[in-house]
Amino acid sequence: MAHDPGISTAHAVSPDSGEHWTAEGAWEVAPGVHRIPLPLPMDGLRAINVYTIQTDDGLTLVDGGWHIPVARELLDTSLRSIGSGFGDIKRFLVTHVHRDHFTMATVLGQELGVDVALGIGEKPALDLLNNTEDLTENPFHAVLRSAGAGVIAEEWQRLDDGEEGDPRLWKHPTSWLDGDHEIELGSRTLDAVHTPGHTPGHFVFADRADQLLFAGDHVLPTITPSIGFTVPPIHDPLGDFMASLAKVRALPDLQVLPAHGPVAPSAHTRVDELLAHHETRLADSLALVASTGSTAYDVARGLGWTRHLHAFDGLDWFSRGMAAMETKAHLDLLVARGQVSQDERPDGIVYRVVDAISVRPPVPNESSVPTVT
Image (tube, rainbow, N blue to C red; front, side, top):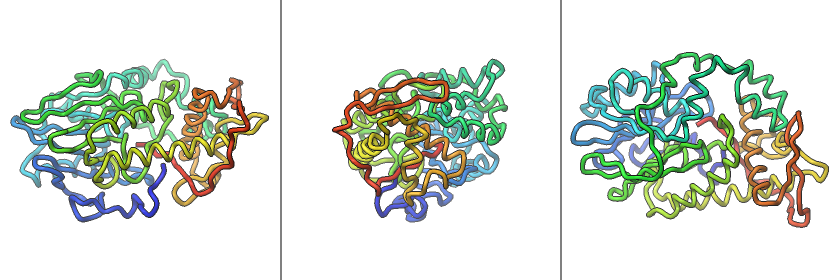
């Protein structure tokens, strides 16, 4: 993920709390809207922001968090601090299917008998997770091999923590979000906007009246979401992501309520930065594709990662896999743009530059690192 110059997620203060954005509590971001950071069991991302929206008949939650005991207990405590509880939850609007957003929502939704809404584009992933007996291997391993990262696929086999075995975590939602539409929440109206890219079924929710964008992982203030970390794999996830950014840019400029990081003042400003970052990253990737052919793994090893420009081989095995898949997403967009050709081989897709004249040397101070979000 790429970081803004001078801004670090690790040190970011959120204006609603005046404290580090992960500080425990229910922080009011607008009348009737609170941000509740919940912990995550990972080093890269320390918390996820769950948002509560007060309606005439109870609470709507945007995202649910990762279903782990400490997060569930903190959600209960935080809701009680604003005079509510689990019994007041009437609906979950889940931005996308990743487990730090979906699993608490689906488990609580089943227990409480309330609506859990998720983008229809996430159905293939849930179908896959609900039919694991038909799988001969983790589906991400095939994606890694297509990126030329077979050695990483072998290491990932040792990283599986077994959580996907709990059938409660991956139940299909009670309703599907399909296409752009309005959602009425009492006196409040949200625009549900389909923003594929990070995942195929990602949605953001725009409250034009209060100038709020519940942005999920689509627009993050200090990092960029992982791209290409999706199964079943899709054709051009980065192209989808950049088109979705342009779609959000066409909305009014709204305050960003992100899933990770502090509340930010301008969606337009951040979208412009994200688009510029990926154009730079595309140029850097193009410059690293050798005339004799390169896999995404080869290119990823030539790029700097994290805001500290760590070498690829210095990353942990999980982050190396994420980096290889994100690099593949950049190369696939270059193929779609006609700048690179591809040749599918058993040990990975090999990419070649179509027009070497257009290639410039990579910029050494631009960086990105993928993180599971």
